[in-house]
Length: 288
Length: 284
Image (cartoon, rainbow over all chains, first blue to last red):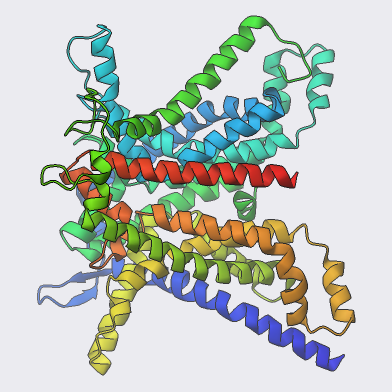
């Protein structure tokens, strides 16, 4: 028995060491370093000292905090939009379509998900450009004479953000709905409940865990996105991640970039924490 | 409203139309680039000038096809090998993490599990800059103390591998955990009572049970790596991965070769999805 216990211990260390190495070196230390860097700035002598300068810069420069607020508002709006678009689809695939059709449609869903964001964002550039597919088509059939200004606007940015995130809303809702017993809906229907009542009193509450998981993932993806705002958005569609990219890759002001990064991390953590608190859900549910 | 209940004709038509529109929205960008990859034109979009394979095979000066573009081929090779190493590393650590969190009890388990899930809700940008800052700080420290310039601590190939691994391992862990939850623990106990060591029990009993999930997770980790840009862009050294190369081309010099590359990616993914479809159907 004693021997046996030793084996257990040995195996335990064999399992715990790689996991600890991963979490400490790739997650904990980098984020601690992010926080520390954000409080460093050059003093008058050009030395790096502890300072709130990066954060003061953020709050005093209107462009920074306005972009921050805009990014947050748009991200919440896109998350709500993604829910509106995704819910009927998730319901259709789990409860309305025949099993055979549904599995074919789910196959189609997986393709844009796996192709990667860059290719799909590029696809939207080809579709929405001044000489793009949509304008070309509309002009050929004679609905418009001048190309519509679709690309490089807030509209195209929202399309791109919605496109890359909506499937992350569909899938968790589908897995919630899959376990909803049809007889609940049939019973409600037999008792004379209207579609609206069935929808708001049975279907939505039942799928709440999936909705929350989806909303958290969509929000995180949208607020941290760079490609859609950068390639599809116009000059006025500034996104907070673009400020971070500029700090790191253009102006090389890494400490200010770190402060902005930390603010973004705080914002997304707060919103996610709030969503989990309000719904009484745990983080490990989000993953499953 | 559901399969077993009747609903009005207009409701069904409206619902069907909505679903049709959604799938059009979903597939339109992919269809457009796939078709335009064969357009005999020097611009990335319409009008249609006839069919050509130039954007794949041409090697003339004004039309450099995908397979004649050495830079592009090099970035594809970089992406494939990065994806391979990321998949190996994150499958290994992610599987170990799944075994640890599903089968062991220890202090601070809750905290560690929370950290392991964190990459799901940390934007990729943040992971990228955090790892860049840390690697640079460590690199500078080593250079000051020992006078050594370690490549791993500069933006480089291996830093990209580590950066992508840091979040891919979480996805592997979740996929393997999901299967491990269905595992009948008495099988492992039977092995132990037959004098197998704990390690032998895991290797000969648990791992074979997990194999489909591990293979699936390997593919997912590879795809995550292959398409990642948010984290990678900060860590990239002198050899760009395919998404980074495509990104700079899209911004500065769009030619239809972009359509050709995108078409190849769409084609590969479609094949993978179909394989996955039939594999999961034959299992049922």
